[in-house]
Amino acid sequence: MKRIAAFMLLVVLGVAGAMPAQAQKPISPEENARQSRKSAKKQQKMLNKANKRQAKAQKKFEKRERKATKKANRDLANRRAQKK
Image 1 (cartoon, helix red, strand yellow):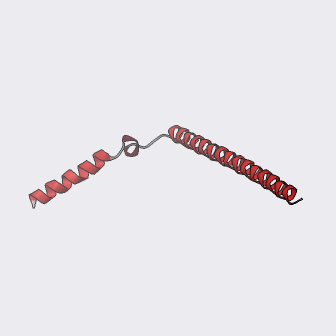
Image 2 (cartoon, rainbow, N blue to C red; image 1 turned 90 degrees about the vertical axis):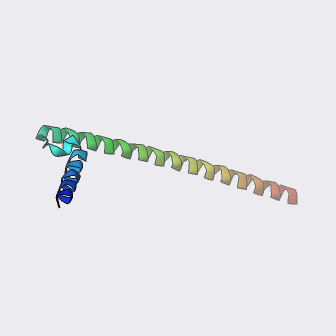
Image 3 (tube, one colour; image 1 turned 180 degrees about the vertical axis):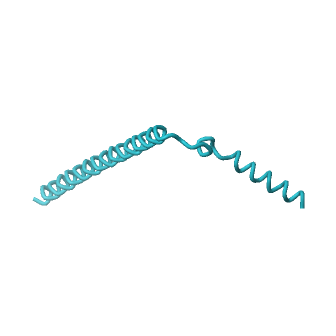
């Protein structure tokens, strides 16, 4: 019985020790506001980055589409010229 109690105590202390120090102490409203601003800034930065990637992919797609259309028109003109 003592072994089980000692083991349970060890487990509880191990879990408490594994928690980060920030989670163990209450944070001030100023610190909470700072973390909130930091998180919002990070999320906005990631959103901007994703939007930039999306715009770049869209431009590449449109360029490929224009080139394909141009090539198709050129090939069609060549075929029509060969028929005559």
